[in-house]
Length: 375
Image (cartoon, rainbow, N blue to C red):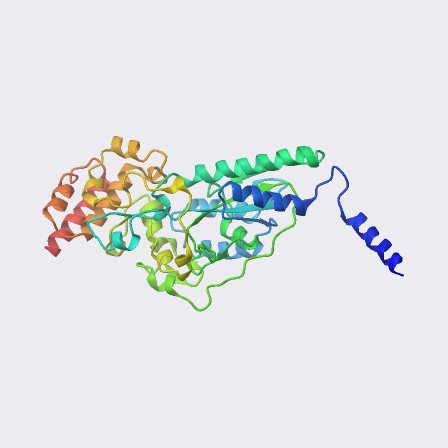
């Protein structure tokens, strides 16, 4: 009887173990996760290319107009909803998280000093798009080399992303088990939200990981902390009210009623993350994101004095550069209007009062008017 059972087990093993030259998905996934850790990623997961649940939420968000001027969100909605439409033959999505919390001046201290400019923590150092994509490319090349040796007949195609195409990154992070969607809509883990996400769309059929579990509980600190009340409900953000949208994505004039709430935030906003209890467990992230150009401590008048050439040179390789010098001045003008009415601030604004850009002139005029009223 025992011998018969042993024979049965041997038969089962023989049918489940891959033949020579065939893909052993589970073993490969374990290797992918080890390679990912070696490249600095804090987590690697595998998801199936199904985002149908999130696609319905996206369409509702678009129907409500909450994307504001983000026209590409509507234009490419179908590509977000159908990964196979973006990259044909996609059978699995490899997800990755790269931590970025920088060794920098205290965020709360900078926010409490209205004469200084607050830059979102993610933008203090190198442009994350390049860092994340280059490391994902290296990860994919490791997979290619492994397959060439262990499963040479396996077809392998891929494409890497990091906030660089219509990809539902947070949904894939959730589905692959590396993060859940916080009530502020940002991906969240037990070590916080200070991480970038990236993906590899691949033709490999890899065994998926179980989805992440939401650990926000009854906490609503992120909702209460938003200066402009942009988190209109748990897991719902109206971009038109979000300071990150207003200072980064919005190309035109910042709505006057929202300007006072922006405070000294000149590029992005972290308030909903700074208050999150899970971020107490965050550790210093990748060295690529160490602050450059003293962006974590600089005074508004100093940043406002940068010429276009200086802006381009100083911010080469920075995500901030893509907003351009004009919007940079627009944002700082608003912050100066919210700052103390010092002679230095007034002189800095007056120096830009005749700027060639109507956008800059309008925000400078508002700031001068606001300062004069506060004096």
